Length: 131
Length: 149
Image 1 (cartoon, chains in turn blue, orange):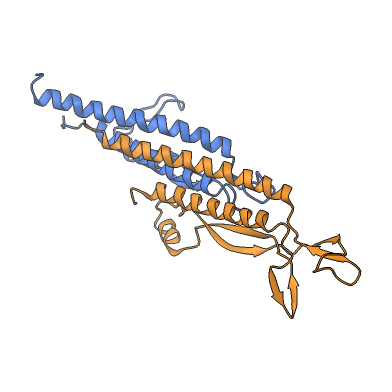
Image 2 (cartoon, one colour; image 1 turned 135 degrees about the horizontal axis):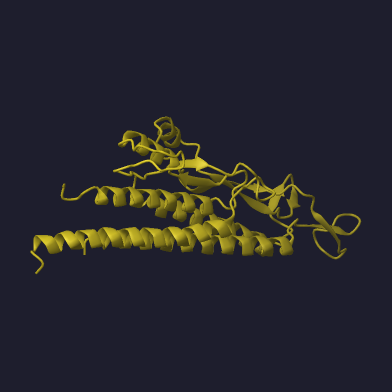
């Protein structure tokens, strides 16, 4: 068993996703008054699929069973998801949604950072022999 | 990927919204100005100005990043230009006014205080939203510094 056992890499990927998400939210809110600007979003399905394919294949007896994956790398890709117009000037930013996403992302990032901190704390405790 | 990119995105929006407020202030201050420009020996009234915002995506770097399959967020917002509103001037009957024409009408600026107030509120709310995002981003960075403590 490796010392960091993939958990830190996974959490790092989640932090990276959250950082990109934060950038996209900032960009969307910054352009809330820009004519013809289309809102962007971050998706990590594509990255997840890639990660799933490279992992060990599990024997599935039902198509609804999930794949196995030992190293979920979550980074995300930026997409323009809402090509429709929300305002009369061709803008598709919904500020309420963006602010809600902002709050969600903040809590998500904090929880991941806490988990990561806790992981290091555990390792630290082990290194010191539980003292 | 720069650490402070998110903050610079929000900062660009703060600059843009502040410019918008400056322009609205100028419009409100000059709502009664009949002598703004001297053209061909004749005074022109003040014309309402407006800000044109543009998403900062037209630079080379975002295209390179998208070609390389990397993230393509963009760099915030910029004030592209400040243009003048071409709607006709208001004609006000005021024969005693020094700028009145032969039939006693004075051309007044095409500034509508009501519209300016609505724009001002919109700019204020946008500014506040961007301040919230900036503080949230700052919080994330501060939290990242606490990992491992």
